[in-house]
Structure formats: structure tokens, C-alpha cells
Length: 189
Image (spheres, rainbow, N blue to C red):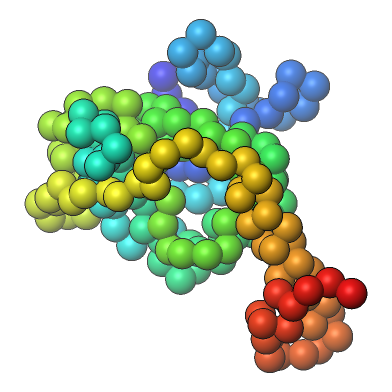
């Protein structure tokens, strides 16, 4: 599959619905048994990255993970992309191969990296990371939260996120430059 990208490319692209594909340049990609319509416009590339990190999951020792650590400008683009396309899917490609296509649940505004499962072998991942980083890359442990996913806790976190983000956006709109997160986290009246 040729997505029009150079070797060693890393690209984050929007997944389109069937209703959206008319008039847009897209590529079809298989994700298991599902066909994805991936817009050819890339939002983030290797130029937005500081480095690629390799992890072994602590929850499943056989599971490999790849971390895309963003530059300062890359973090801004990641935030803007995830804010604009919240509740949509993003296709993440490495060396023109689909790595994953997760749903963006909420805008990604914290942290400097995205960590996802790697579908290939450890050898392939280490070679890929070393080429992108232009140096040898080692495997680190990635500590995942143990236990069941807690929808209630996630929903509460999302509510707080929305309140903080609304507070910051309102302050920006009114020309304020200081943002007290503790003010936005206080109980609602």
C-alpha cells in the first residue's frame, strides 16, 4: 500500500466515514476485517516528533508498544487535531503500514506523547525506531493501569477536563493570560 509518503514516515491521518469520502482524496486500508477510508491529508508527521520510544507492556509481557514523543510544535498540532476531531478515528501509520486506528475520545492536551500497541515484531519495531531516531533504541517498560477499565471514573475525568478547557477558553476569549486550574475545578454552583 503506497500512501504517498516517504520511507520512515510517521503519519496521523483522519479516518473518514462513507458519507464523507465524496470529493476527498482517500485511501482504503484494511484494519482486521474492517475497511477504513483514510484521508490522504496528514495532520502530523515525523517532523512533529522528537523521537520514537519502544515499550514492553507490564500488563502483557508479549505486548509491544510504540511511543510517539512530540516536539513543542507537534504537541500544539496534536492538541488542535484532537480538539477538532474529538470522537473521530485517527489512523496512525509507520513506514506506510497501519499501526492502529483509535477513536479520539477527548482532545489530547496533557503530556508530550502518544503510546499505542505495535502490531508487528520486536525486531521490526526496534529497527523502525532506530531508523527514525537515527540511533539505537532500547526497550523500556510501560506501566499500565491494572484492573478493569472504569467508565465512571473516565466520565468524571472527562467532565473535569471539559470544565478546565471551557474555563481556559473563556479566559483566552476575554484576553486573560493567567489560568488558575483550581478555580475551574471548584464545585459547580
